Image (cartoon, rainbow, N blue to C red):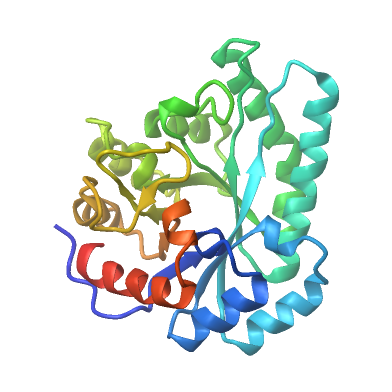
Length: 276
């Protein structure tokens, strides 16, 4: 079992968790309540001067944990595969400019072709962007997604599949983002977390909860403690590997987005200390 969390030094909040806020609102409000870890979703970087965004982050003492999201490499259409490469190269540029050491991939899939083919194209895509990522000092994290997303959002659906791919690529700049929402159900999870840690491939750890019943598989995630995921236990497994990074709160929730975001931020802090 993981030790009790007593402060917010390892708390990171994804900007999409507080979706109604723009980047400035996220940064200023997180900082004001003692949250200095932030993962920036690219929607809040649209039409932003990235150098000005970096100044804002620095002025508020923010630690940029990662930029989300890259990926979506697979397609039966060559033009879409090339467009994905270009977009991921731009994602690397965005991350480097705002001071993020990592981009997180939602890998992608195309239901018009076998999963194995999508995985081949994903691997090819990573290898194509890897030189620029290394030159920029930005690492790449493969995030396995729940199998319900296998047809269109990710052909990587288990930590075992992600481990296999990172082992095949075998580069220090390519690792894994483990999200409890996608992985909690897997009876091999503890062993695969150990495997990931042993290979120094665990780059990020995301937390939230699975509501019972859930009413929307995309936008009905719960705060830690709302649902059935043994978040503390999984955090213990992650920390047993030597992982010392942030616990990243990533919640897509129409319910919480409709509430007062400052009050919601206080709920996040409470859930972080008591149920993470």
